Amino acid sequence: MPIYPFKEILPEIAGDAWVAPTAVVIGDTKIGARSNIWFGAVLRGDVHFIRVGSLTNIQDNAVVHVTTAKFPCIIGDRVTVGHGAIVHACTVGDGALVGMGSVVLDGAVVEA
Image 1 (cartoon, rainbow, N blue to C red):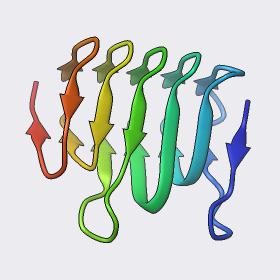
Image 2 (image 1 turned 30 degrees about the vertical axis):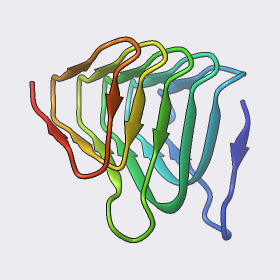
Image 3 (image 1 turned 135 degrees about the horizontal axis):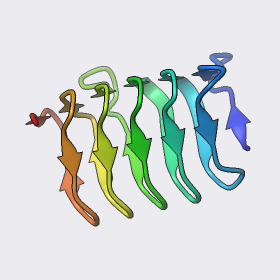
């Protein structure tokens, strides 16, 4: 699985989380216990941080990104981010579903 540091910050992935071999995780990104990141997904914590809670599912080809110094991306526990979704610099609350192909942008708050 491609795991890359950005500005010397290396992602932190729980020991029981699973990241597909074609997913990419970069920079200030933390992935919680029993979460999974599927094929082709990209989590890019380059200019702010990304936090993914426990038991969360980031499905195939989803993109999780941030905005410079303004908005991180926080994804709670028991969340599903559907295939091909873009989750950008927002907060997704515990138990929420971001549907396939959805686009969630800067500063948005998605609740269950």
